[in-house]
Length: 496
Image (cartoon, rainbow, N blue to C red):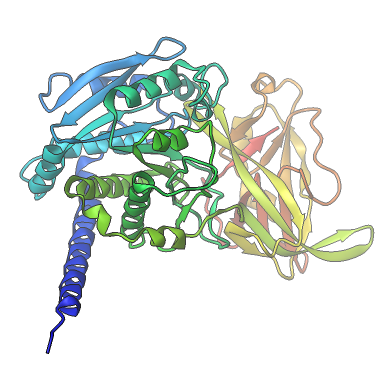
């Protein structure tokens, strides 16, 4: 009788895979928990500029762990630098902020530098494994001119992620030159995306989205792209422990101008990562932590080639990015128009407006949709069943400046249905244009009229919700104030 040992081999292989996955998950948890020890303390908000990271690069020039070199000059002459570390045969190129307003992975990169500089912290073996088996090339802030203005595009007004073919920007020429010179085995194209993307058709924000970029219109899969999928599958498994249901993937339609698609075509296994939104994390510090953990975990499996244990077909089980989210949805509000009543939902988005040389921002919110929004979701939702939506009243007293208004009892005004306060003609805010106030009120300059009629499509999102003649909720500039549970000292008001 002939005995088969194949089932036994399969059993051993399965046990090995399970054990390896458990070890990876345990290590990822330790990295996640330890992030606070490596978090770069000088980068705490998203809107930093190149001048803020230059000292962090400069101090590493004297550290033997690194080789720091200029990769070239931006359109405005800013020096774009590359940090090299490691001595392994597998070359990995990581670049951040090719879009100037996408800084999450830049923060995480400096956290990773702090990590690689550590010792005697329980991660020595991981550091040695990565640095002995890979050579890492980091280009933090590839588009410093855009970062200076906190804008997506370069100074030329070109989206450099659509400039891989024409290469009209010096920044695109730099990246192409690095790919040609280094011939990296792996690449990480690190981005941010809108916090309004959903993970599939769901109410969950896509906190991290991936893409194994396509190198042709047929969406072919060769060994180079297959490894991208396998890396993403492994990273997704780890992230599900921390953001369950909040990982998505982009449609893999081929974009012939895109760097991700072309780098993949040029022979580098490319993973595109988009840092989206996470409720309660406007400065993306939690998402930064997820970047730190997941990218280091990916470098670990690149180092020992264990990424090949993942099944590429699982890549397609990750839900696609959807556009099903508003920042706020007010549901089931009763609307009264022309003596008639009906029920409507309101979809509201809070848009960032830059000020102080683009280093700071405030929110300006508008009603983006109105009607039946049941297929859509809100990162925040308010059920207004039984409440009537009304335009707030304009307070009869005018004030000379915003500081006078800030002394008013906003809660009392809102309870009486006043959402608007007017400034006098000689107010010193006339030259500011659209601006903000920390008072939960909508401030009108002299001559600026409050919207007429029922709040609706295209209006600034300021209105009240009443039941039985009592104002329960005030929505000011797209932010909800529960007048029964009012918190003083907090506000996102607007000055128009």
